[in-house]
Length: 332
Ligand SMILES: [Mn+2]
Image (cartoon, rainbow, N blue to C red; front, top):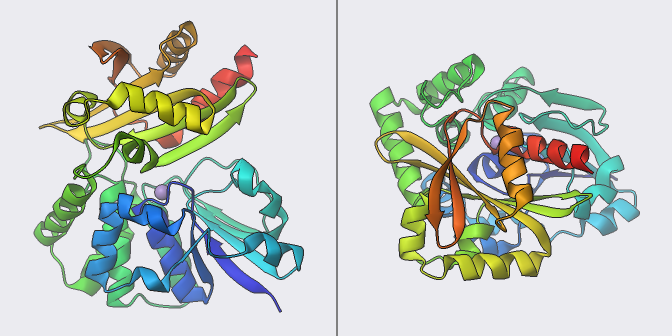
């Protein structure tokens, strides 16, 4: 008897969480949110959307609660990956249990019997397409979850952010029709999700850095990537201990480098990048990114961190993370 589980990526952002719930409910799988349960409170936008959709966190399983490894050893695990296509180092021993991948990141070549990887703005677009192609229709709850994720990951379909693809548009329109929601109402929903996401009140610096965190292993050591939805200047104002705590965060995770990316809207969409520690390598990473049209320019120092403005605001972490991995594979 196989147990089918669906696993999201380790950032467990809104898109990832929504994809996990949609797939689990549509195809009768165990939804596994890839963070410990106590980290859900760091994702206020996820809690907001789940509340609005009437889904209790009690119905979800978190990675610290499901014995995936044990199930795999028993030969009973069938694993579906949503919103990522490559298991992290700590989970890669589960690779041969993967049967299906639904994703929108660059294909890292994990084997699976079935793969649907499309370069769209939101993975929810891919999951909803898969549900519709399987002959099912969305109910209002699913439509609400999917619309929330698509609006969020495409910055409300903003042409300026350049994240939305035609398929996102089609699937979002389908969801809004089911919800009987017009564009103004969709924008209102987006604003509410955004204000939940950018509400940094009550977070310690360590929690801010952990909130939407990914890491990779390179020959130069572990590289961490944190995303913050506010400028570093504003964040440093509300978190005077930012630099010291970031150093502690790096030490706890044994990181060689930490890249902090920010994404915020102060009238216009802006992005920044800081690489800790300040080093020659950090400068080389910036040059390398500039060879790939990121258009990074020094913006000044805040609390000893060198901040770069990302002139080309289109590339997201999805594109930048593989570039940084490529940088370290070429220098060593
Ligand atoms: Mn995603």
